[in-house]
Length: 314
Ligand code: SF4
Ligand code: SF4
Image (cartoon, rainbow, N blue to C red; front, side, top):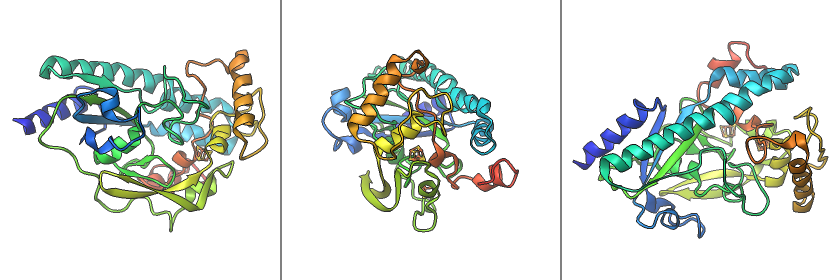
């Protein structure tokens, strides 16, 4: 019966909501997270985390290549609106609501929908950060990428993102913490190694502010599997993602010249941006001005999809 429950939920999420990715892990796998970010902190009788998501649209990825490589800044909005914030965020919020309501109505459980891949309506803890660079400082209730890794959707990569076999890190993840128990759970991805930093390092080499070290790393263990994540300067990454550099965001009203700014310097830039009319966005802080470590990661048919078709110089 419980296996049927798994299949039933999977079908509802994949077919009913047009999702491309799906997995379920026991919520206990994230009970070692810092206080306030454990599933049981969010839902006292939590049993499972249902993770699902969508592939980003190839056309928006190539639109960002046009902006980066051809200087066509008017194409960046295609990625920003449709693969980062607006459409995808709103679409997945709606679908997450529907899935959570389906779970509660069908199984009589509690289903707590989480904020998606990108933050919305959450309060950053202290200084804001790009969500993948420091999920909890960014205000995410749980680390969705860790949940995705535990649920077998992909590996955690050197670039701190979840890397899928078919689309690399070019995916968007959502999750629901639920009191619903399953007798069948997904295991971490165990296929061919996807991120091999000893041979690759594209993300570190491409990083425009040298925020992602090519040699130093931290090891992260999720559901019994250990991943190497490159040492990341979160504030440096913030400069690029928040677009505090004219070379990455021609419209910026604030310029941070240092690649590794102090908390104070970054906080000053963020404060200025919040107060400037040009800095007002639907998100708390626009964070789509970089993502080069996602765009150029070669995992997931990248060469065939983009390079071989002349859509990027690589
Ligand atoms: S998002 Fe940009 S700044 Fe941050 S690690 Fe990736 S490439 Fe570097
Ligand atoms: S670019 Fe290379 S090293 Fe970086 S995450 Fe992708 S596969 Fe790993």
